[in-house]
Image 1 (cartoon, one colour):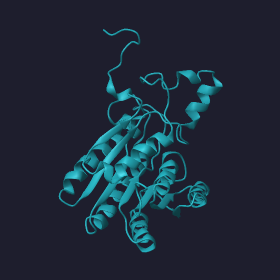
Image 2 (cartoon, one colour):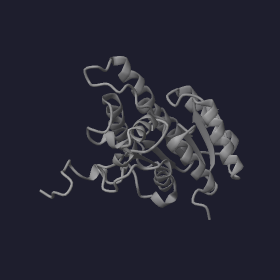
Image 3 (cartoon, rainbow, N blue to C red):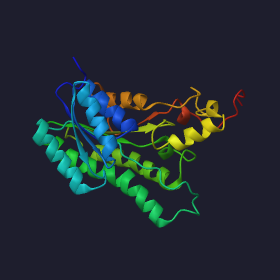
Image 4 (tube, helix red, strand yellow):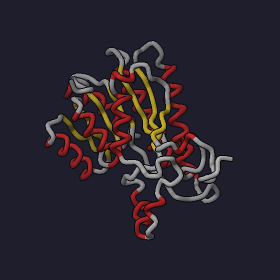
Length: 263
């Protein structure tokens, strides 16, 4: 039996990368999926790919931080598919690649709007339905950049730290409702957001250095994050709640060290 058979899911940031891979995997495992993104062409490609593979999906062109749109997406999922058991608040942006002193308040606001307000409205509106209908699983994309410094720009890192605390707080706010809230903290994953960095490395002939700081010595793929999302979305993770799970090749498991030296 498929691991999400009969379940209904919403995925934001579904036009590419982790969101697309997760929407495809959720559908392949039996879920009906509502895909949300502002990138209309990519969104249509994701929906078409799910349907072509025999799954059920529909697309909604909207910002993940638009509260009215997210509330409407929950209502549409319930109307079209009969319920909602899974919400993956995945949409995110990197923001400006600038230093702390170069960043502006607007830089911060733009990143926080998508990366932190988006998960907040997702949790709020998904939980309202789920707690009245037997529970469910809400998951949010955070980042290893939210665990400690050195993995992303300042606004991005701060927003992802906020996501980690948000899921922890939400898990307790939703105590005794059978609604679980967890975060995934990806490491370096090749997606549309990170594509420029990968292309620069390839052009410079330094592709082999990508991911060199983690024990697996490589970058990750969207499918590997989607697999973790599937676990958290499924009943297999029924006792996992309020957690921020790193999927990063081991990067966040250590303080900086010199390779080849143990002390």
